[in-house]
Amino acid sequence: MSSPKPQTMKPQTAARKLGVLLSATPAEFQDGPVSRTELDELQADPPQWLADLRRNGPHPRQEVARRLNVSVSGLARGGVTDPLTTEEIKALLADMPAWLEAERATQAQVRAEDARIKAARKQADAQGSPRS
Image (cartoon, rainbow, N blue to C red; front, side, top):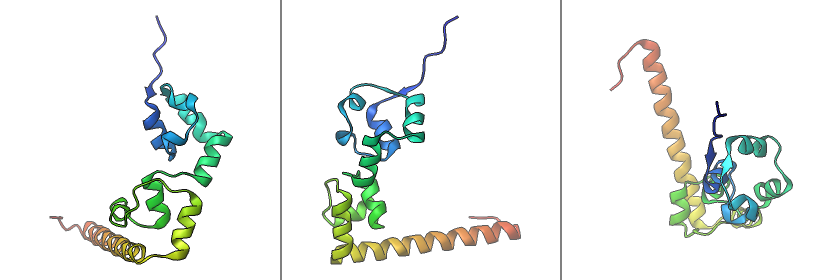
């Protein structure tokens, strides 16, 4: 009997799961598939290049949006299409352009509405009421 073939993923998928931009990773990471075991090891004990990327960037859109507390769509509406470094994100937060203030307010409203709906569903479930 042969041993099972390890599950692998494309480098792009692994980079997304690690929260880093693939183009900023070392060539050896970009060149071949990444096994689940390798991914788990990278997450458990990140090498220096991964720690530096997570700390300093450049960061992918999802991470930039999270750090700015806006949606990915909000970034696009604000004209932010390129990956940003941590320093660029800090500069945007310090400067707080009008588009960023508006998008943060929109994001806060969306989160408040989501929380309201979740609480209403929880209350309805506790009372045994059917949801629509």
